[in-house]
Length: 289
Length: 304
Image 1 (cartoon, rainbow over the protein chains, first blue to last red):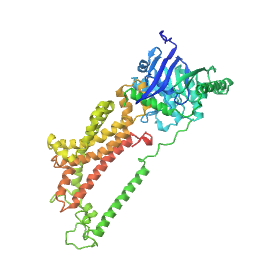
Image 2 (tube, one colour):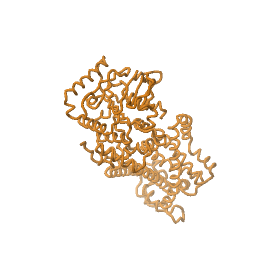
Image 3 (cartoon, rainbow over the protein chains, first blue to last red):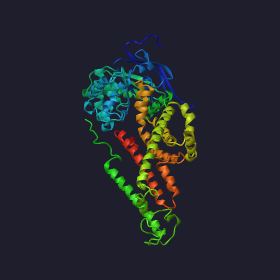
Image 4 (tube, each protein chain N blue to C red):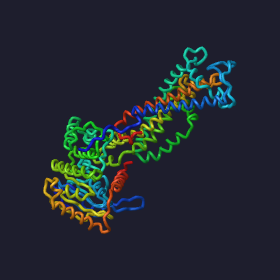
């Protein structure tokens, strides 16, 4: 471990992070020896098979779960401090909108909690909904929107208070391929405009390659980082990017890195269950009943 | 652009389905009346004109004589209906209907007070319990035990403590009301999406903010399920409390009075029972309307 302070350009530093879940007398090692530095303004994807602990890692960065060992620093601060300072924006696989609030009120929620005055938070919520092209849906309720639109509301909500780090846990996993590609372009557009650092958990290799500055490849049992693939595709990325030779090479490289980390063969499916488990675990640990 | 699903999901609150359930309830009532009078037709005492005195000409002589179907145990439905228009006691100006509506409104005021206090008490207890496992473990067994004591045993003690007054009646109604709200809300206040909780934590929201902006709104379907039970329980509580409470008004008093004169006018007690049931249904319906208004923007599966 290094003792020098994190350079100003480092957004997230993980040093020797371990996580062991204890249920009764059974201990499950979720993560082992995670070292990772994420630079300010970087777009990092975490990719790996189910159970590799990528959702857990995201929640450790977000200070929703405490690591068993190791150090997490966010822009030089401890993760807990960073959470108190509202450095994190969270987006989950499900939109997790509040049914009883309109689209606009959902986006205003974090601002209410952060004590913004009404005029400022209204203006801000509208601005963010314009950004995700939902300016005409302010008064709608979540059930009146399609899945893709709901997820855009969730993204707008996560961005309203300009968090320095945006954490996205398979945000487009439940969307169809066409919607997913459009949402990918939208996220890139927002990322370019806001300059926020993004940590993005995904199952999709093409999605990871298209979006990221670097793809962090993980393997399971126990969860660990096996490879980091730098994505040198030019910015801005668009439909041409998806058809370029370099894009296909990188997709292949990430796929091979995944295979190399998983000798017993690939495994497909959602790790929804795993992420729910870690959410429950977080509640237990924080004493929230 | 993704398409917007048209309209909101169909629910039990839609006019068409409401008309259908009203029709269904009507059919059931007709069926009950048919079985009721059918039993009297086969095994009742000789049928006479409505409200006729004994000795009036017999219109129909049933082939059997069944105890349960005589005019004391099972008065004719038309006699129950007609008794609403009879003086409620000898030389009274008010008829039974007017008297019962007056007593029902009196009882409803007591019940509504007890309902309000009970719901509040239930909510406060559940709020304490979901925030403290220790309090929950220590006190929930007593909350449950409180409901195993028969209210008829407890009511006189409450009257003793509070004096024979409306206050005592309200306490009995409160006692029957707080329990379903407590139990339902211990669950309801934990029925949020765990990811929504993570979201609130990522905003560094305080416990109070989490309570008011997430836990409480997410619990509304549970709250209303409990309030619907509590609404009818509060009416029962008020009626039961009026007797030992020495209240000279209310449905409880009416039931006691009509009980005493059952031999001479069983129809009046039946009328009081019908009005009590109607009061319970009315209170239930008020809560149901409030529920529909407050949860109208939620997906159908999130509504009670």
